[in-house]
Amino acid sequence: MEQETTTWLHAVEWWFNYYVPEMVRDILPAILALIAIIIVHKITKRLLIKAMQHQKREDADIRQLQSLLKYAFMLAGIVFVIASLSGSLAAMGLTAAFLSMVLGWSLQRPVTGVAAWLMVMIKRPFQIGDRIIIQGVRGDVLDISPTHVLLGEVGGTIGGEESSNRGILIPNAVLFDQMVTNYAVSEEAKYILDEVPVRVSYDSDYQLAEQTLINCAAEVTQEIIEETGQTPFIRAEFFDSGVFMRLRYQSIAVERQRISSEIVGKIVEAFGQSDQLGFAYPRGSFEYHAGGGRSLPPMFKVADRPQGS
Image (cartoon, rainbow, N blue to C red; front, side, top):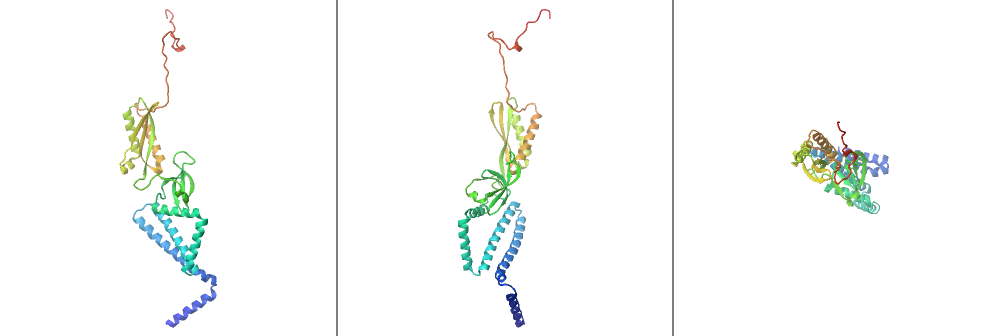
């Protein structure tokens, strides 16, 4: 039985060497290694996703891990293919050294971008779904690749912070040179302080105005208050036509415009239902005083009444 198996293997080897071209025989180990890496990547990705979903991790964390896993297996695939084609570790080392030299001299910016990508993956100054500002561009992070960060632009074509549906590619290399502002640095600090300025007239009831503004903000941000324990508050100052009240409250970064608009609507409704509250606006008045024999304007002159009228 053992002799028959050996004979069969020799026959298969002879057939392989005779009918399969030499070039195909040389690259076959690389192809097999690549197929094996793809299969391992698929299995590993599925297991990690199930584990993270079981831990109730956020979708942004899962997508970021998928991205990191994909590029890690791509790098492993390149190494295995080079090793398979070279046939020895020494040749692979020389090939890697040559590629490193090429990358160092001719691809400096992309290499810097990859280093920045690794920094983002490890340090996690921001992640997919965060609203950030890079180079003066405000947007929501849609994707993080080894070369670029894809932002969904906020503003741009309009005022405020609504999505413009335009995508902006930011090279990763600039992350080492530019300041990055993250609206929510962590899950525990995902809210930002926002305000709605309200100009209240001098003849309004100050205490009632203050309480009304706080109630309007509390009604809209009730869930945020329950989670953070921080209630809205007022900061006030004088201006020419009245009192300038700044209604401040905790807001969700990506929903800042919607929340402020709802608060403004409730404030307008509340002020319209009260006779003790009013908005301030620029206005002026004139007073005329008679005296010293000076002539009065025509409308203030007193005409003598005819007798008998």
